[in-house]
Structure formats: C-alpha cells, structure tokens
Image 1 (cartoon, rainbow, N blue to C red):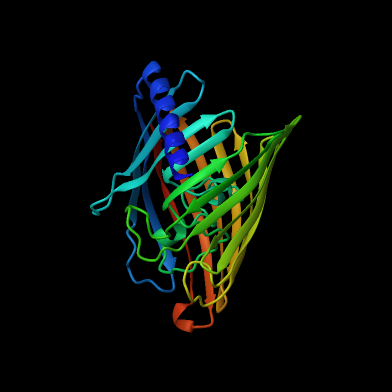
Image 2 (spheres, rainbow, N blue to C red; image 1 turned 90 degrees about the horizontal axis):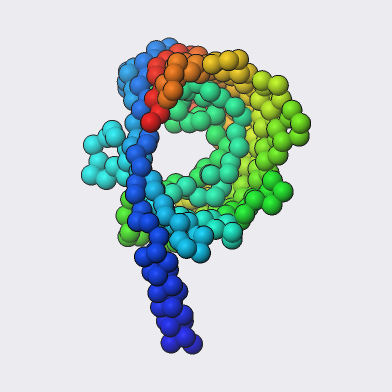
Length: 330
C-alpha cells in the first residue's frame, strides 16, 4: 500500500509539473493598504499607555497561473509594514481553485473567521471589531468570535451552490503562526456554512461558524440584510472556558447589532456590542463615517463609548473617544 501511495503521489506531481510548464509563470502583483489615525480618549483608568497617533499598514503580493486543465494555482503573501519583530509576515498561503471549489494551504485565517458575519460598522474603531483595545486601557472588549489566528492550516471551501458555500479548516498545532515548530500540538478544527443571495432590491447574507480547540468550542451566527441604501445586521456567539487553554476561567458570550446607510460617497453606521465574560460585562457603541475622497482614498471617523463593569473594581473602566484619519488602498 505504501508503494502504491508513493507511486500515485509521484504521478500527481508529474501531472501538475507538466501542466505548469505549459502555462504562464506566476507573476505577483502588489497591493495592500495604509491607515493613519489620530484620536482622543477620556476614560476613568487613564494610564497614558495608548498612543494618540496610530497606524496600520500592510503590503500584499498575490499572483496565480491557470493550468491547461483549467485549475488555477497561486500564492498570496502579506507583510505588516510596522513593528519591530524579526518576522513581519502576516499571512502567506498557496491556493488552488477549480470546479471542485478552493483549497488553501499555509498561514491564513481559518474557515470560521473567514465566513463570520458581524453587524455593519464603517468607522476606524467599531464597537465589535476589537480595535477598542488600541485606544483604551482594558483587555475586556465586546466579542463574539474567537478565531485561532494564522496558524499553519489546510482549508477547503466548496463551490457555491444556489448561494450556499461551506468551508472547513484543520490546524495540527495552535502555536504554529510564524513558525514551523510546535510546543503544544493542540489541534484546531474550524468550519462554517454561509448563504448570500439577492431578491429584487433586497440582499441577504447569513452564516453559522464554529471552531474547536483543546476541550472547548466557540460558535457564532450572524446575518446582514441590505435594502435601499441600508444594511441592517446582528450576530451572536458563545465560547467555552475550555477553548484554547488547558484550563479556562469562564465562559463568554456576546452579541452585536448595527445599521449602516450609504449616500453617494459617504456611508454612516451605528453599532452596539455587548459581552458577558463571567466575572463582569462590557458594552460599547460607536458612530462611524466613511467618505470616499477618490480612488483608493477614504476619510474615516469614529465616535465611541464603552463601559466595563467588572466584579473586580480594579478592572472597572468606562469612557468615550473619537478617532479620525485616512485609509489608503493600493
């Protein structure tokens, strides 16, 4: 049996090699984004530990070739342009597209993270996108999805059938992001199913996703509905205390709800998010603006409020803030 598997693998490799020689060599295109923000925050726990001027920049390289049999094979590499670490690679993976669907292999988000649907929020600091921790002095922010990250993994997505698509990811080590070594060997299984459809003037997006690691799981369900110039959405998620770490402290659940409205070059949004994390609860709301100034240039602003009500008074915090700046895409 082993000889048969080796021989079969060799034949597959030769077949792919022959197809690649007949197709064009992969050329990588350059893309990415640059975001520069300025903000102010007023909060109870003001440790002066957050910069009032922040940035987020990535450079992306992506390219593919189509084999003679119609299968597309390509690569995507994303570099973070700020930070002082030795490895600034954000994501890097190989992808294969065909009538069978899509396969990804490398360091990239899993199926659950890729298919999660959240309530709309268009500003730079959404109540439900995790960026609050960039501006305020707390680790407790509303959350209802807990992706394992860009560990080495293999992912498969089915073709789209009548608007439906499913996906599943497997990671053999939960600490393999940025490295090919492992110290814990914790496997991660991630999956989801989604539906996207248009009905006259109404668009609908629905997704149910989940992930398993260690002895715990998390799951999330979300939906967005678009009509006229409005998008209305909400999502809900729960995480077991055993997810991730060998011993957890508490279960977590959370939800978000929001609405956005587009008018010409501007889109505005209002979003609220809430989480119960066992020994406390945290809520946040934001008003967001995104205004397209030109091709690849968007002015974005957020006004946000938050309250962290913890049983441990040392962790209590509340406040508000405002952030504005430019987002460039290239």
